[in-house]
Length: 230
Image 1 (cartoon, rainbow, N blue to C red):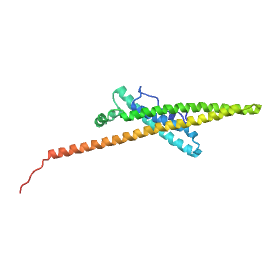
Image 2 (cartoon, one colour):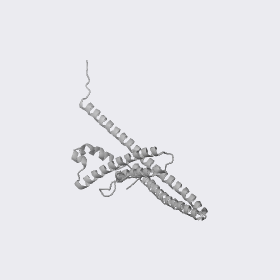
Image 3 (cartoon, rainbow, N blue to C red):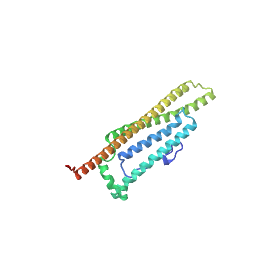
Image 4 (cartoon, helix red, strand yellow):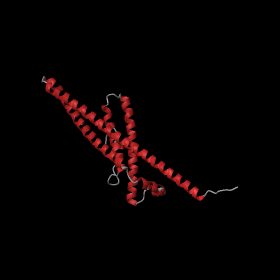
């Protein structure tokens, strides 16, 4: 896949384990959003070439990191499917994480899955508008060339110039809509991830408090108080 001169290293890695799970879909949605941002950079007239180049490098780095996370997650899933053994099992850390994993469950929370579905719908709308904009841009190039040739021949270009103005307006609307929907998708996923992080931290804190309370109870039970009379 080529995105503004960006090669296949920024495209989503092929699935290695059949159907997408919640985590993989979430990561792929984030990658799609970043790829859309990368394509739309050239449309931003408020940025100079130096700012665009800098922003491109930042987005490419983010896409590469997301791809790395996705590949690692897919490898873990494939390992479980092929051998029934996860990477954690091979490293001897599975037992340490088993209790917390059973508490947290697998995949994402219901609210995160709903946010992910909403973001996916927004991204699909963004891609539709992006496709419309691309087709309209092709039409504007054709009209400009036809107008140039008609002027050389001395033919009236009034109708084609009117169509060109209308088509360019449609292009601008499609691009603005595509950018807006992509931003909405990105914001939705960002908010869901932040909420998920807060809930995870809250759960970890509650777990720590439970451990402390249990430890305190054991200490009190193990060392009963003794009344001393003088």
